[in-house]
Image 1 (cartoon, rainbow, N blue to C red):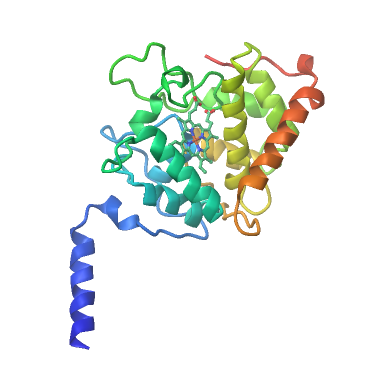
Image 2 (cartoon, helix red, strand yellow; image 1 turned 120 degrees about the horizontal axis):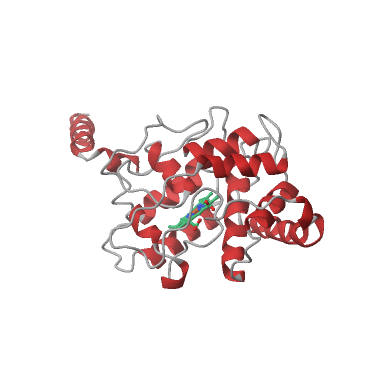
Length: 264
Ligand code: HEM
């Protein structure tokens, strides 16, 4: 008994001595995870709305620094509802790409690295302008561009609790891609929008309000809940979305009907 009490006391002391971000190793949540706080001036943020959202809610370190592979995987699986295979695999790949040295951790600021230089940052993004090329030293990811996001919702004519369909996503992508960015950029953007639809939609779909909340506010929507895919969101869901989106972009969208959306 005394041993158990000693272990409990030591754990409590140990946990409170840790920096806040290190206490989230196995965070799990059903509804909105953690309190939303806007990033402070010294906090690192990325061009990825989902990673920023996770940091704004304290699921990932609020300062956007010192992110381990374990934290990333836990966030994807326990909070966003990805399958173990997909969530942990995705974290491993991302970590391998951006953190070459396994003794180091991920800082969200490194994600501003452009596609041409081995990063992911590409043209025709949903939520913000491109990082200028060549990237000025110490450049930060631009914050969300709210009018741009409202323009996307207006272009598909969706608001409030109306569900954004895959055809709507195809229209948004076609509208943003009128400058015809390279195919690799289009493919990554398609994967991102499918990820968003897949993991960010709650139990009944991605509504216009949820789209705005994740992209413009970088905040879990108040009515959000983990999507309930059997076994979690995984590779089959992703492949199916990419296939549907590709077909819709080719045959489901009348290009002349889609307004040219801001891509700067
Ligand atoms: C389930 C997890 C994730 C979701 C739902 C997600 C979602 C998204 C979405 C929707 C975008 C498009 C933003 C836009 O076009 O403005 C995006 C962009 C991005 N994501 Fe993520 N993401 C996830 C994980 C990751 C990971 C693990 C990394 C890398 C460590 C990452 C890095 C990026 C980067 C660099 C961009 C910017 C691309 C650009 O717009 O130029 N994301 N993500």
